[in-house]
Length: 177
Image (cartoon, rainbow, N blue to C red; front, side):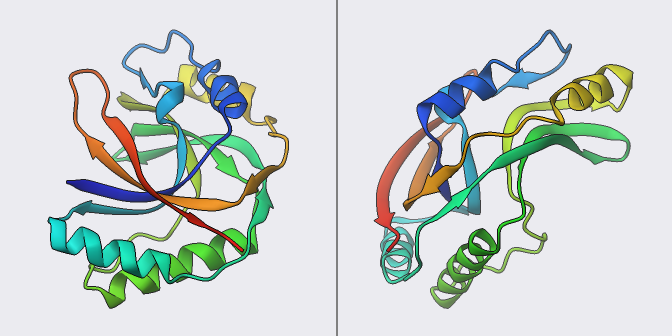
């Protein structure tokens, strides 16, 4: 099964973000039900590995904290946009939690993440040349600022690939103190 660790978002925030979808040719918009803030993508794990991951995440001790979604942008590779996102206001508690998760997962044999952690909520996946239409979208959403969101737990999700969009299942929630 494919696993990842994330902060789930309040339904009202998900609906607001899903409302940003416009007719942007080639964009595959993430449905509201799938929106989340990834803390660590794990990938494929067998049952025994998943149990070890569960135990490692259950042992993490961290406090809950507020966070704010803000700004918009895209990730690109070779001049082509592949992910359209809403960002997160700089938050030391979020980075501290993500570091704890990374450390816990490495202790149970999950390979280290090679990319630097960039907190974001994916709005759409795409493979488009970076152009004026994309820049206009980002510019028009760049002043977005969510109400404060209380991060009270992290969730281990499984991902099952479907025809249109993957289906995410919350496997375990871990409370933050």
